[in-house]
Image (tube, rainbow, N blue to C red; front, top):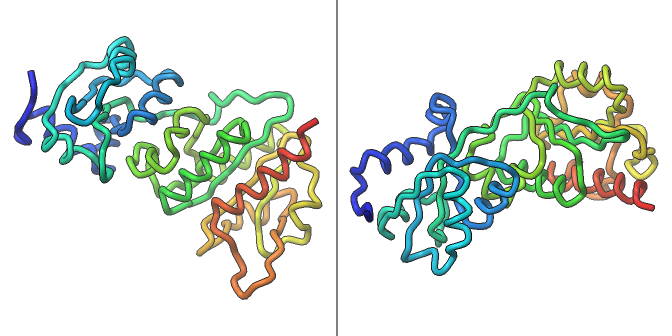
Length: 262
């Protein structure tokens, strides 16, 4: 059966998941895009429903069967209906409804010398998505989002992360709880700060380390500025005293990776 009406109850229910409050209430989120869905499935996501548009998806029976095998109900919709459901321009015809991500600090498994990113109060899905892509590329063991202003089911975050929100362990927690958790595990806390006494290339990142970054408009809270083992700066030669938070995170992470590679 092909759904052609926006008044269909299943379509109306999915449209409501655009709202953060509804996502939290229903504990569901939307995963749009064939690449993002494929990565999510590879990482163990179990969608409840797949809306797909035959006029847009082309020939991709493998992803359809992969989603069906994960237990999703398959619903075909017309192009006009899908374009209403879609969050992005030029949609590719794939949109799944899946359980909202729920991970705790205690569930995060650490290796012998973990590298973590802590992102405090990051406001823009694009910035957090870029941080997740860096974490995925560099093999970071987890991203802890402190005092979040973005819910992890935000479709713009999933899109900006290119699906790495599913491949990188990501946890929501308070700054206070996260600092205590890191201390209990003897993880060195390195906070990015324009006032830092040490440049980021002068820090030893080879041991267990958490790199802490905050939104550039407000910087890090006193929890991190006062609680960090090191406040570390990125050299700034211009008139602006901070970089985009995702760029700052990438510089720190790849310096750590450079030091850790054989």
